[in-house]
Length: 373
Image 1 (tube, rainbow, N blue to C red):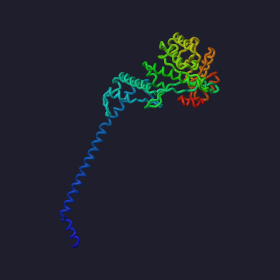
Image 2 (image 1 turned 45 degrees about the horizontal axis):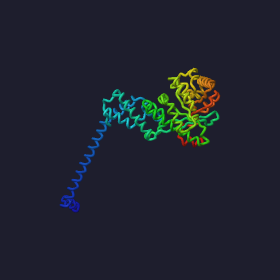
Image 3 (image 1 turned 180 degrees about the vertical axis):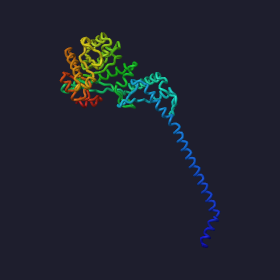
Image 4 (image 1 turned 60 degrees about the vertical axis):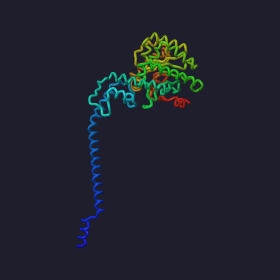
């Protein structure tokens, strides 16, 4: 008992050194508590700010989406799933117009300056397209056209844009934008020059020199007063066999000013250039129109191909088109052939040429040349 009591007495009377250490410990503990309190306070404030802005961010996100939805589809790119792709420049334009920040505003509505948004976004994509020409981001892909024995007769040159952000973009996503300005003329000229230069290279290859190359021409380009002279100059500069070049014109373009169309086609026929009416079956061509137009090919639109093997009415329509055009001395090619059933049905109906994924998807030049070799 004495020992225990003595020990307690010693504890109750610490030395000066122990007193100093005890004070330091208390000070450290107090400082640690203060730091912990400050940290907790910062966390509480941060959480409060987050909850405070959460509603605004939701409003901002929802209303920005509504604003984007007011922009016409023709101005925007889409991915393979059909979702709209918004470029960095377009986003900047929207933010600048509506004075947005990342926390948003509660009074944004789709009715705010939709016309200006459409104009600015259109200008932004036009600027990107012009830059694409300068930076050589546009390229031609090639899709084969075959006969009934699957022998390759020719190819169609299809325009693609290798966008630095969105990857490969099909022409139907950006040509409508280009057509709203003279940019389409620059693009069409580039396509013609590139296609003719490619034909010149194929002249040196026994496997490719007999291929026909089909090129789509926009209404703006074809209606230019000097289009015939422009194409004549390209043919002379490249020195190609013009009979290897086929220009595809839409049904609506050919019938818009049929007399002028016939005049230009005949002038280019004299140079050797061939012509095809594209997307036949979607417009209003009549037998009298086809009799007048100096065509060597008619391309049946792919929408008639979808159910041709299972829908008797579609088969009758296609059969009528084939018989009518053959009697006029015009070749027929079916576009959008994707299955063996469609191919077999078209052969029975008397179709002579075919194009579609069944025979090959559009591919870059090196892949096409590797395949055909």
